[in-house]
Length: 305
Picture 1 (cartoon, one colour):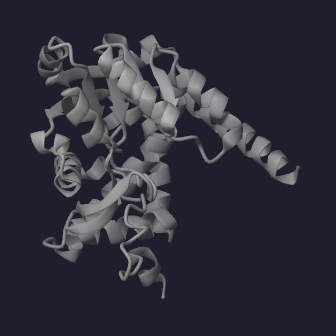
Picture 2: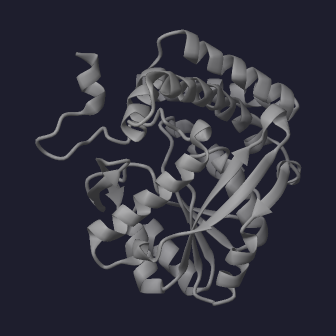
């Protein structure tokens, strides 16, 4: 009972903050997000510590000064990621759609869609990935895999706002996988976040920035069976609240390889390519290496000693 009460309280606070951030224009919203980012930069915080560890792994060739510059900028952008969720979730979908200033590579996706084998979109945690769902569901029949939120009391609310532009959300379980396969069989589009730890089941270890990370095998299984085209996609956040630019990048054919290590390595290399194209807006504060292979230390715990 106490846990349920706490969940409800957390849900109310979360939705209240979303409403507050949705009251402002995007330039003001992003200015507030930047201020939050400065707080993360100035004071010790978990996002700062985790981001610093991940950046050291991803860019060992950079000097400490260069990595600190990356760290600072990524935390400022993380603040914007936090505040912009208000307008992205609560504004009318048409209003959010109008914030998209340009789209790069859409002709490639259109051509692939005409092959009538379905299309798989891999959207890493870069920039405003929530905007991607609104854009894609406006142009294609869209089914997206989602993970239930930590605050379970907002799950229904989250599904409602994410599906308001026409997409269908399915959970990360067997029923969700079946729904994805069905969508591809009907020449529809599916969306997956490829850079989350999928858990012990359905994953294998593959290098991510040269360091082993649990990586989903679902993408290779779906792509190899359906023969669907696969694209990476991300929404770049423009400066001073000017909106967003969307990019589509064809994935390497090896993401559909029958060899799991080959396929997952290609998948991670695609995520790396996107992250290197826009390093300031990648979610470096995510513990991608939290569950290392047997015999290797957790890089995040090691720093705490």
